[in-house]
Length: 251
Length: 276
Image (cartoon, rainbow over the protein chains, first blue to last red):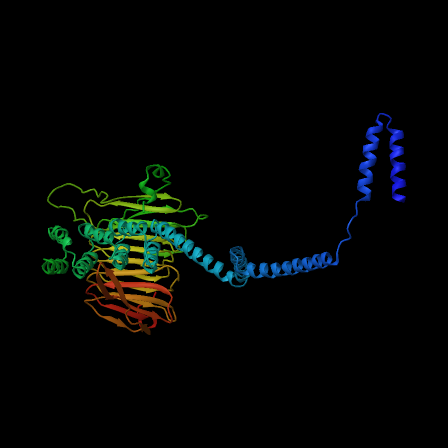
């Protein structure tokens, strides 16, 4: 009943504050309020509590199950595979990095050596070319000998050797150039150059060597050149014999 | 290999020729004296003798003295005709000098002229004898280049690198010492080649004379010939080197000796009776 008194007082206060409300309205409100107050509010039963707690427990259990499922799913999932791949990549990268730190110095050394040898061979070639244009025949012989020590010769060197064979003022230098060119007879331009140079040579020693070389190489294209040489009446007798022999073998 | 004298502008740098005519009634020899710049490094003397011998002697000095002598004396006066024969030069001789490099030019109009040349011993010489003569070079420390197709070549008491070739003549070289570094090469087609080494000198030799013999009095160590592989398209060719390679006292200055039918003779200086 205390409640009733409070509500009445509250209503009275409200009525005092709000002057514009009619008595009918107040009566209705009073009635309504009384109905609301007199209505019995039922007490919550124990079963409801039990139900709540069991639901709570269930949900907790469910949550735990989800976590473990998520963990196991993580290992199986596609994203995890991608991740492992990335990790492996990074691991590889790092081991490579450290590996390069330990063993990589040798590789760079090898590279440097290869570069150096390339540079040296380039220098050697230019040295040969400059030495071939020297005045001293001894230096030119040295240059030609350097070519014979090379493992391979490029077209520039071959060209300079052939021009030495044909144009050098000294017979000895020409002879050495011929001997060097015989090392490179598997190059077609060398063969061609040797055949062409047959009619240009005047030294018997070189003519003789050329006849020997052409016979050994079975170079039939040299025959017309040798026939040209044979028309020279001052040709040395033994050279003439040797050339005749070569032509006989080749034909 | 263009000599500096082939260039026209360098011809202007032509310095001086001192033509001393020391005509002698009997020898008819004439001298040409060329003075070199003492300060500069001596270059080379280049001389092509069209006909006749060339004899070069090295000495300590700074002048080149060229003496030319016609080999065959002029005939005596013809008694039947009352003319007196005035002897006239049988050859012309000139020298061009540039940077202590000397080019001797001789025109002998078919006469055989023998030349005797005194040069500073540190000079290099390039001598070519075209016909009817021998070439001899003594006591030269510079480089030597000699070509004499038909005659003998003799180089004595030399120490520089030498490149000598002949076709029908013999070659005889007596080394005073071997200067390492630059190779020497001697070739003859038909002639013998004799090389005399000082004792204890080191040399690496490459010798070839398919038609002749190699005769050695020196302690040569010969090596086996190496085989070489060449591939030509689908044919593989194995060839043995056609040089005999040898070393003297462990190897050193490279010496290439090549002949076709001549003998190659190697000696020590102590075994040679003729000394300088």
